[in-house]
Image (cartoon, rainbow, N blue to C red; front, top):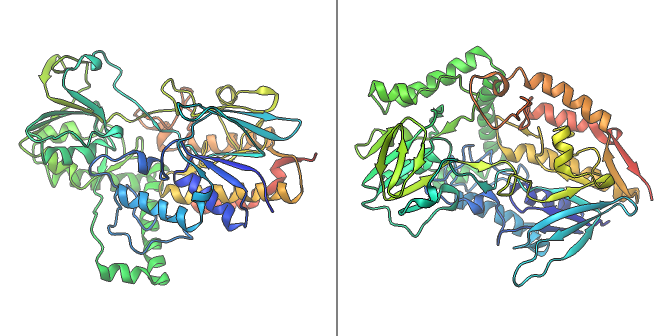
Length: 491
């Protein structure tokens, strides 16, 4: 049994998609990756202090548990090594093409084939390659976002983005400005504060910061995790704890109150300055924006060499930054300011996709920003996405949502191959009905109704990032969906 499948991206979702095909004895696929190794975000991002926000024993493939995690919340090198080890175990390096960027993909209705065009490079001319199925696992947050204010190019010191860390720069004795206070900043600031002479943290708006409670696992712990029953008990306990987040996203008062209490107590355990506490306390409930985790961010802010500047940067100068009418001279500026939506600098997706009748994917999504269960889009036959629009359960590990979606996609591919059919396409009416139902639910959740700004919803207020329910519900609904929601076309 074989089919020509192109998987775009070799991060945790792309590797997972290939593993699911391998587990189904399906071997005719190619994985295209623009980086020189597997790992995706865990290869690309290397800032100091980078750890996962989800417990290690949940942040893994269910069928490839790792009893040897060294910490309760694994570090970047360990996660990247885990993904790489899985790729090696499943023989995926024989299917991988590294340092290849796909520029566009076009669907041919007559043949049911996708033609992908690679972006040429100095030593690699552009290619046109044909596959029956196209599976996107590129992720949506890859292009660095910088503050949209004047003057960054005029700064005569050294500057960089946390997502492109300068490991060659010695921070000792330097005056450092960290712009941003969210997920990457809470990990970067404590590390920078250990070495820099002075650190200024520029916070446009505060975030809820929960304790990570990270700890190292002993050899005895790791030995115990080799027992399946022990590991499953731990995973069940960790999963039950993660459900508190889901309850907060559902705006359950008790869950919100608990998170607020934990966050404030965590802050006050390290900081006793009432003015600083006021600046660090969000005006919105936990769950409206991404909840970040850190054990050492608040202690770092309490250090003598660290100063919180609770306002946005107005401009960069040759010698530093302007904020709230005050210029501060620094030697180094580190932007912890996240990523642009889309995979390119101008906001477009990582590649241009043209489906039935030459319809451009970005135009189709601009008209109707929706997908079928995060895996398929009407008008784009034989095209699937892993963790696409509304395809992720927000409260727990991305691995779990990706695993359910990838298994569903693999089953659809197998069905087409077994029937020797030309194409499979989700029905537009089914997709519209499904999205109407979930958007009604999502509009009652914290991301849509909270008093804050976030990147989970679009300009119309539609929440596009998450599935509203639990993993159990996602699993049941995907199991019940099957091929009745799709049209399979024969040759």
